[in-house]
Image 1 (cartoon, rainbow, N blue to C red):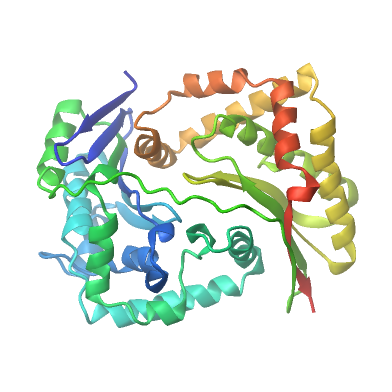
Image 2: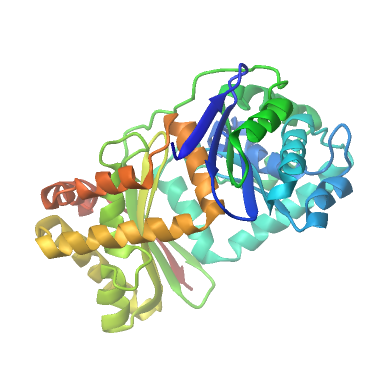
Length: 408
C-alpha cells in the first residue's frame, strides 16, 4: 500500500509515505483556522501560529528555533481560513528530534506573557505590508465582498483592534475550543520504517488528552453578486471577477479544477494568458484561481493593467468565460487539457514537502488518500459535456461579482 495510516485512541491520525530520500518532512495539520474565530477573536488563529514558537514547558524560544536548524533542518508554520499547520523538513536521522519538537510546540506551548506584545507588533507590520501590496490585498477584500456576514469573509491576519486585546487566557480558550484531537493529522513523508515511525508517533502524540468533536461547517447565506470600485494610489488598476464555487465535497470539484487550469492556470498556454497577455499585451499579471473549501469554494479571475486598458481586458476575460460556456471542447482539446493537469499534479508531487501537506490535508478532510492513479482516473472520466455544464453554472455573468482597485 502506498500510504500507511494509523489512529490513536485520542483520535489523532497519522499518514505516512515511504520514499527513498535523505530528506524527510513531518507536519501536524489542525482543522482550525480563521473561520473558527468568534468576533472578538478575529486574527487569533494566525496569532497563535506566531506565538506558538515562543516557548514550551521545557524550552525557550531560542531552543525551539535552534533545535532543528542546528542540524540543517527547517521548521515553519502557516494559517489558512480552515487550517493551522506546524511542519518541518530535516535529514532522516533526525525523525525522533523533529517529532518530539513538533509535539512539544503543538501541545505544551506556554505563550509567555512578555512575548505577546512583541509579536503583536510583528503582526501589525505584516498587516501593513499586506495592505501595501494591492495584488494580495485585493483577494482578501474580494472574499469579504462575496462572503458578507460569513466567517470566510474575515481576513486571516485579523485586525489590529482585536489583536491588541488578546491575552494568554484568550489563546488557551481558543485552543481548547478548536484544537480537537480527532481533527488533527500528523503527516509524514520520508525514509523510515513503519515500525519505527509508529513507535515515535505513539510516544509523542498518544499522551495528548482526548478532546473530540464533529467537524464544524458554516452554512453559506444566499449569495448576491456585487460590483465595487475602490480608488487608491498606485501605478496599476487591479481587478478580480468571480463568485463562490464548489466545495471540497462537491462531485464537480475535479471538473472545476480542470476548467480553471484550462482558463487561467500556471501554464503559459492557458486561455487568459494566450488571448489577453500574449495577443494584446494588456497586462503582465493575469490568472484564474479555484480554491475548494469545506463550506464552499472560491473562483476568481485576477488581472492588473493600466487604467486605459482595464475595460478592454475585462471585456476579453468575459469573452473567454463565454467561450467556455458556449463552445464544447473538441476531443483533442479535452485530451490536451487533461494531460496538462496530470503533468502539473505530478510535478507538484515532486516536492515531497508539498506531498506531505497534501496527503495530510486529504486524510483530515476525507479520512482517505487517493493515489495519483486514482486522481488521474477521476480526470479521465470528465467529459466535454460535463465541463460545459460546469462552465455554464460558474461563469454566468449575472452571478459574477467584481472588485476593482482603480488608480487615482
